[in-house]
Image (cartoon, rainbow, N blue to C red; front, side, top):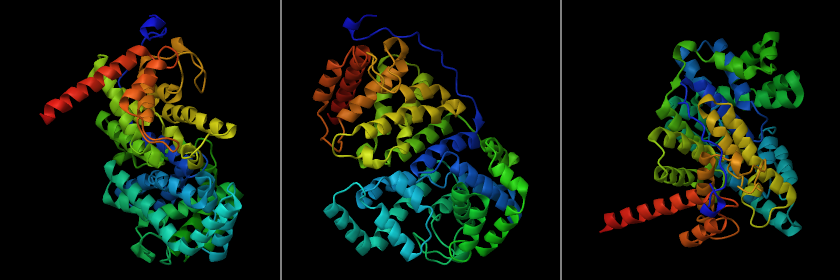
Length: 469
């Protein structure tokens, strides 16, 4: 193939083995590490919470069905976490990842919260801008907190329902920020009115955060300090019993904890995933990614649509298109690890910000590589910003190293980015976006793929005209 046709040399196409059936817990356990990133937590936070929570469930005497529901609530407790990231950056003029990480170390004492806000707000902003932000937050703090927690909780519960989980799991996620004393959010529930799964998840979350900060003693002390205010006193007593078991701590601190947590799912009720459910999971997590920024709302879904349109024109069979669509849905999952202060910046990124932004591709690849059915998609997540001339990132791959699947997702990604609003410019007309792709043919993008996109758009235009006639 020659560059005059718009295609540089391309490696031989790799065969595609069908996705293997595997346990749902394994898929969601791996994807939960993407949720950890957007909460500013180290990898494995949700997995460690599941470990703590299921050990508590054993002392509670829960049956298999309830234990299984609690297990998934713990792994997916942060499903809605990306939905308030942009708002945090807007209101607090702060890095949302650092803000969320540090906020998890606070209780609801007014003095501590105010000190935290003063320390976190507008550190890189001008003095007058920072002052205006602080005044707004102090005056409207209650409404702001309610809005952000409500958004997060409702969004997380909605995604859980999309993933076919029971209403009890959805309510466990939506009630994560309720406190035993009734002073939590979003509904101000108190005592046993708070769903049990939420009570366990909140305690497990705080225990893990303080264990990371200060070890075993810090975790035990912080859980005890919040007994009767944040936490169900009965659960606190059970946790203190657990804390006296050396085997419990050894398991929590074991580098292989992910394997152990997989074994904690009740074996008789362990769910497996088929191809249809893998599609649902990919769509759900694409929604988590797209919720992170108002400027990427719907981006992954549109990239998946354009990818599928191109693949159809290029003669891909149905199963290959299906797997490629999943890759397109999840290609940007690594952006959950990038601060919205960078994603939504209205201006040129500095070098440090560019390093963080470019890192999202490698994060996407690392997350997807852990999941057997998605492992073949990992290279696309890692390489969709590579260019045929070798000037892309993160590895500077050249044409011969970039396969056709990746080239298709790259074109779809660029086309959607050009035709959608961004912080620094309005959406471009289709004709201008296609002209830019033409200009980049042979250096950045594959001309045959661009031609297929044109053909797909023409088909869509013709079908729309016929439907309107």
